[in-house]
Image (cartoon, rainbow, N blue to C red):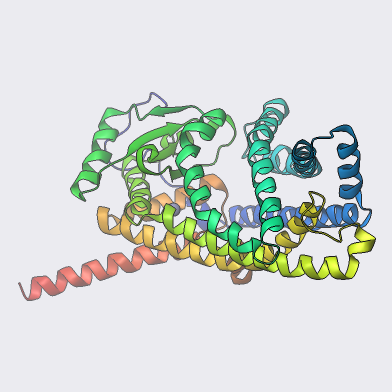
Length: 405
Ligand SMILES: [Zn+2]
């Protein structure tokens, strides 16, 4: 955190009137539009290129070559799965580079150069490969054992695997990408702990992450399960937000903790995996029956079938994304409500939301269809309106109490 002194209350700096400035709004709209365009182009080209690879039977060719080099069946199978995962990573690399190294820099939001970015990408690949190999082998084993019910096996395995991942994430994965340290500002730490204690919350660790090594955007999040449970504040947030704004953001994260939102999110992803895998299973069976011979995929229990199943699963997953986003927005609204009730400070909440929008160039009020399809959080305008309504209700409640004590 920057060393400059800050008043114990009130603003670190005044919130500028960006959100009411037409030029700023136009820029935020352009940024949002460019991000969405990137997402759609990334999805479409990804699906087209992998669809073409399937049509050209590249997964089957690769599987045969690998089987020739590696006679041990399990080793050949695992190697084929790794080869598919690495190819998918490589195919997506240019598109991700454009997003992170061109688009984010164009809007002055990124602080990362090309080499550290590439190191991040490689690290992510190395961490993902063993997991993808295990999941891929697991899916193939399930298809072999239960050709018509493998999707159910995958569904049943999702919650335990997601829980294990959530438990390990803050201690195994996150530290590979960022440095985490305890909140050093003693006055602020004491205030935040007091706030949590007042609500009877067993406060988990409050850590600060050096998000500024990649971005100027402010962020805070909760992570971990059981003993690895923690709330993380970005240094980008800590340096720009006033203490009462940080307190209200922390209260939002505490809301997630109190509502056990990690478990709720695991439940949502289990439902998502179940439906996606079931749809992929139905579509893959049909595709194998109809085009199996042309694609070289008459049987689905071979590694070369995984890219087809993944391709169909991605298609099915896209159809389900708006429903998952709706669940997420509901969870976020409840955390906002919790933050307002815990702090009773609608003013600070509104200032924090405005500052968040301003710092992250986040358009406060996107078109409803876009919002409904793509956004995991309520819009800033909606969150501010909810805080205003909360303040009105509080005032009305106090007035009524004053009249009838
Ligand atoms: Zn949240």
